[in-house]
Amino acid sequence: MKAQCDHYYCRSCVTDDMKCIICEQPIDKEKLVYDKKVHRAIQALTVLCSNQELGCEWADQLKVLPNHVKQCQYKSERCMNCGGRIPALTYQDHIKICRLSVQKCEYCQSTIRATLLEKHLKTCPQVIISCPFQCGAKDKTRAEIDAHRTTCPNAAESCPFMAMGCNFKGNKEAVQKHLSAEPVKHMIYLCDEMTELKSIYSLMHYEMSCIEPKHDELMRKANLLQGELQLTSIFPDHDL
Ligand SMILES: [Zn+2]
Ligand SMILES: [Zn+2]
Ligand SMILES: [Zn+2]
Ligand SMILES: [Zn+2]
Ligand SMILES: [Zn+2]
Ligand SMILES: [Zn+2]
Ligand SMILES: [Zn+2]
View (spheres, rainbow, N blue to C red):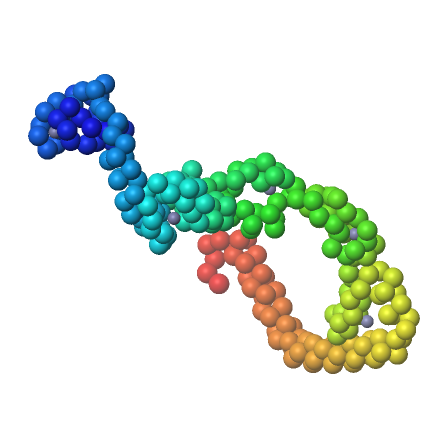
């Protein structure tokens, strides 16, 4: 647009009470004149993409810039949480990892930092899961499944001989089968256990026999002392 002083401005740049920056004459917004020739010349200027600083290397005439910007892959949006300019292509990913964004857990409705949501979902008591032992129980909350674990017919149990060295694990039925399938193996576990108990017992017995004489000695001394104590309380002034 041409101002009264013959200098050119774009309409959006002219403010109220503005003076021409070249000749310092006041510019009347109402009296700007459209100049087709100058407009064309400006539109023909080569410009860089507005997303140039984000990496776009596009450069072309100003008149085709609006078209390019619409589909520019470097187009950016402001993150509503951290305020950063985020390339539109990765905006959805950024929202998930933005250090300031919070999201609602869709199961328990609590508000969680987006970066911690994944972790939360692994422990959230309201998340819907199925029984880890594949008993068929499903569509239950984690809290319900946790309560169900102890009663689940498929829950893994250890062989009752675990303490003696059997590592077998399985559901109730499997443990029963395992026990009846390998009676000899378990007998050996029992034998080993018995032998070990026996040796522990004889060791203890031996230690006891060493302690016993000392024990008798201590008892004798204790009785003696007790006797003396009684005497002193009967004759408090008597020098023993
Ligand atoms: Zn302007
Ligand atoms: Zn001027
Ligand atoms: Zn661009
Ligand atoms: Zn952000
Ligand atoms: Zn939750
Ligand atoms: Zn189950
Ligand atoms: Zn076993």
